[in-house]
Image (cartoon, rainbow, N blue to C red):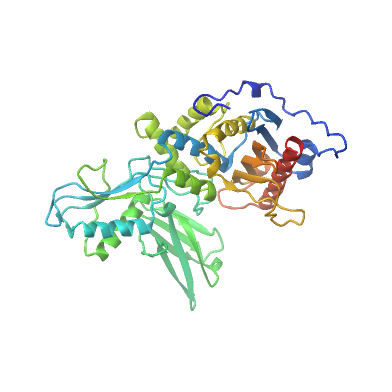
Length: 484
């Protein structure tokens, strides 16, 4: 099997039928359920497409509409992971810096201090606390100029996808300087007839309050949340009757660089360094780097992204890879996704693939399951993405997780409203490995749902459970037929 160094041929797939021939049962064995019967029993409606490939030989084993493009949802992150790892390298680390634009004399910065982001997807409150401590340890005690932030290494995007509930924390803003996955923690507690509310940038060790995101309580039944961009901060309102006695949730942040700056300034103040806020830097700062925070390696970042399916991480590593590939910052998120599309078609052999982002949150992205299964089979040799995929639990006949299930699956899941996808690797008891991609989507139900206000429209959860049951049934069929 050739490694992923070159283009993966897809010509054989072009001749693959929409429905594979049914395998002949071995003498003395019971006839396996056909893929068609499993799909019909699932009762999903809409579109179903899948493909399964023998990893060892690259042979195409079975498909159902393998050349039909369908929304990959978060399965797109497997492509983004390969794109970033191949372009940046597994050991790549993001850097966040504190830069003095003027000379430093006897602990006084004779110029501005700039918190400059480098696209780190994992920058959190604890990291900013450590950077403030390191600045103090470097001997700085005063800044004569202004304190500024720089998030321009990557394009600013107010939200990843426009058609999502306004309060969805998985759909935050994107910039070159991000904090806590660009989420703010909203907490409320009943105090008599009123409520105590807080907005903070909490982490494992710190809970700094913030003003960049503000909450108001309103006596109404709906909508649950409203949002208004005030230019320099986010204003939220929440329906007070829905709050109960108390609770908490994360909300998206639309001013990520300002958010990070406010939190850092609070930690600097705790060390006696008073920072006077100024306008955001208009260009990448030049001067003396006083403190640098490095992220985990890209390999570990991708592993976390595959496990937790963090959309912000996908967008940041995807746009950073595009910047490296093109030699300059991408103009937009969609522009970066278009570059990744060309790369995926050329290098991975994803025929007719289209990406509108790097996370799969936008439902205009499309992948053919046959092309993706072939690409995963070929990519397995490089051991870049396969070891980073998460184990997928399979269930026994009693409906409970079967931890001793004979089939081991490592894959990437993908879920949107009335969209469910799964792609990765299945290992049979005899060690035979299969690469597969399964896409399901009910376009009519999706179009009829109110995705702008509802996290889970009526019927979506039940439909999703049926889709996951179909995914397991197909995998068990393939193992029984092709690796028995």
